[in-house]
Amino acid sequence: MKPLTRRRPCAALALLLLTVAVGLGAARDDVQTTLVYPPFGHCLGMHRATAFHLFLYLGARTSFDEPAGLAAVKLDALDDPSTTSDDDELTVYGLNSGACEIIFNTSLVNVETYGECGDGRGQFRNPLGIAADRRGNVFVADTGNHRIVRLLHRDARMEFVKSFGSEGRAELQFSTPSQVALGVSGTLYVTDTGNDRVVVMTSTGQWLHEITGDDEGELTFEHPVGLAVVEGDDPWISRRQDFMVVSDRGGGRLVKISREGKLLGTAAAADLPLPSARFDALAIDYYGSVYATDRPNGRIHKFDSHLRYVTSVGNSGTGEMEMDEPRGITLWRRFGQIFITERSGAQYFWIGTDILDLSTSTEGIRPGEDDVRLRYFLTEVARVTVELVDSDGDVVHTLVDNRRRATGENVERWDGKFGRHGGPAPPGVYTLRVSARPTYSSGEYFQDTAETPLTVLMALSH
Image: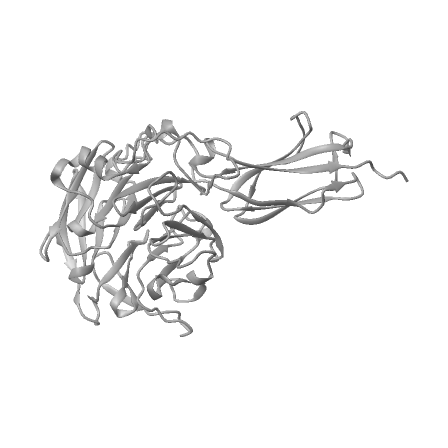
């Protein structure tokens, strides 16, 4: 299966997402487009929640107090099997950690809260991680109470089911568990931070095993916090990829391992091209790329499926394409929708793509005798078109027509010929124009474009 690209109505944290109109079109060179805001028609321009918007929905019932983990899911209970028109209606659960509660939408226009501070039923203490499935099961890493809490969301209400765990190092004991992930199989994964391990259990709380590093002992976890997991049977992960990624060492390292414990890759925050980078919360997209929040720098770092660095998005702040201490992150892989919690709010993005480092191997080409290699870097898998444009702005030849290209460096070649019979291009000054559209929903509304000049020279006579 592949990510869907038909038009999506608004997928909300119940329309808590701000009232700024943003249209998507061809990107300028100075605009970062790896993540983009949805077009105005999708959510009437709403893409950022602030304390003001929370007050509009919930009044004085609560306020943002240390927002933390997020989970997004399409609930079976909200699906109409006779149509696909409502398949985008996501339920988003966000932890308001300082207030010991969950904020969640029960429809596109209604928001509710659940929880209070304490250690009993329906209570939490500094909860940091949350996961959910389509049947309404919700799991919370109740960090301060050293346990995992299972809830059930049904009939627009949250109900306590059970909790499991106590403080300690033995089976079904935890020391400040930070994050929780839920596989499509129903398997539960927990970063047991104080015990330097990832705990694997069933959704009913049955202990399965622990992972303290890779299976050959080359790497051990050191205070793991961030966690994201994909299982091969998930219909919304390409090539049946099956792995987990963990951030540890105070956010200084990313570790990718198979669920069987094989080390698949690492990445160090110190190697990123900015000071004091840190990996906090994690998410995985349809193609296996990894996203990590960086709270101190107000950024999202993106790595490909091999943990090779791709790019960083955003800057610290509260303006457009800025992030104010990003905390939690969740990604709905089917449509490429991303939700991020901040110091006092949340943001909503779509996955886009950037064309970076466009260059040619030569400034001039003699048709039939030379060729030109066009190099560019994509920050996301995209459908690419490469056109030759003359000095009047007319497209005179298409080198690449809507072909899928991978994240990372790509190379296109052209020998200077075009037309039905492959004749040489007339001498002159042209422009090579590269356009890229993401394969997610955003591809219907957005494309990035980059250009570079090319001179076609007179072919040498023989």
